[in-house]
Amino acid sequence: MKIYVETYGCALNKADTEVILGILTKRGIRVVDSVDDATIVIVNTCGVKAPTEFKILKRLRELRKLSKPIIVAGCLPKINLEKIKETLPDYAAILGPDSYESLPEIILQIMSGRKGIINLNGKP
Image 1 (cartoon, rainbow, N blue to C red):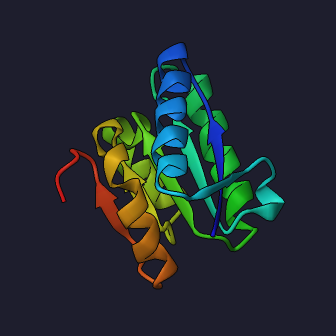
Image 2: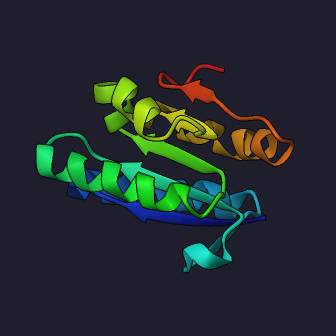
């Protein structure tokens, strides 16, 4: 499996992406630089500013056309979960910032065909 990660938002969110990349590579999950090469797409979001939220939702609509499993992570799910579900009704997973450690297991579930996973607080 190959994972592509996109990041939107503040410096803290960019640091969170580094944490995500570390978790994935530590577990032997390959990270790629191109969405075209990916099996699964992770979009690490920020919901602090409305223009950023608008940009993220637009990008989710674009990514949906690729028909690849999409994981929406970061603070936007905690701020506006319903908008994400409305924009991306066939999401693979939606994760809050406290749920990154569970990413490898969630990715395995997605690879097994599971969709609609929501974990906002880090608990299984």
